[in-house]
Amino acid sequence: MQTLDVLQRDMDTAADLQSIVRTMKALAAVSIRQYERALESLTDYKLTVEMGLQVVLQDRQAVLTGQQKKQPLWTGAIVFGSDHGLCGRYNESIAAFAVNELDKAGCERRHRRILAVGARVDASLRGMGQGVEALFFVPGSVAGITETVQQILLQIDSWQQQGIERVLLFHNANRQRKAYIPQALALLPVDLSRFNRLNAKPWPSRSLPTFTMDSEKLLSSLIRQHLFILLFSACAESLAGEHASRLASMQVAEKNIKERLELLTALYRQQRQNQITEELLDVVAGFEALEGKADEPG
Image (cartoon, rainbow, N blue to C red; front, side, top):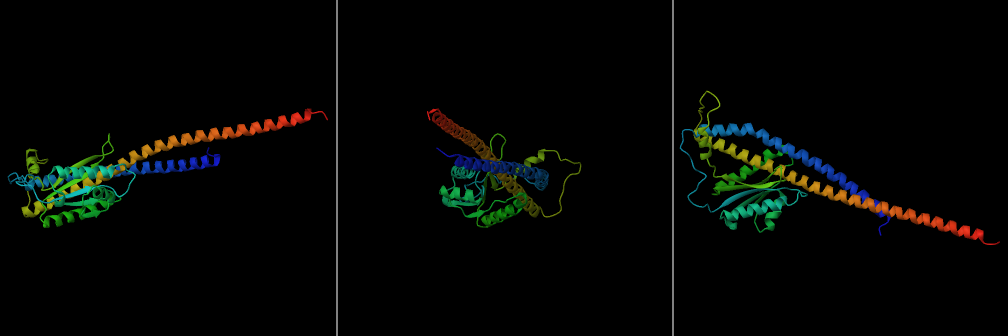
């Protein structure tokens, strides 16, 4: 049976862990909102880029670049995960989802070029037998997302120069009912027909849009901004999902610690009561012994 000192140390340790978990819960909740605001800030910029593409493509026929006549030999894939743990099966889940989706797409493993964003998801992919070409670390805040996205765009440029025409994006996204759900998105080739379909929407002003610079250069620049928005959104959603998963894990941990602390407190009180009872019995026994001696004839 544990002594009172041991039980007290266990209770102190549990209380310290409880304090740490509460702090991590608060940080996770704040981080989730931070990345949600970053996503909200993209709304107007995304609309502006889409309107620009609508203008550039208005005199063109629908460009069905999202459809290819033949299956591309090589496929690039970008998989967002995390650098840190304490977020459940966050990385294992997205790694398994990405590998499964690539298998279903008919892309052989030897013809895949994988970029992992996050040391943990890199390890998960390698653990599944999927090679990883490059590893980028996850940005620690909203301010670092832009730099990470720019590095990814440079990697995509390198792939395109090597003849890789298809690039897929995999990431977890935060959801209210679930901590996160896996998402898949085709980055390249860009389906420009989607922007042609926007021509059916009325223009928001009376002035008809126009442009003076070379249409090919403008289209290329707008497509790059479109890819930037998709990657920025994926990174922010992945980070929000990571912290949502960590928040859920901390909630479970807090519940377990609370139950453990209640058990230790009950054991401590019981042990303390037993000790007090034993001391009282010793006092009573000593008193009775003294009383017995006093009653003996002198």
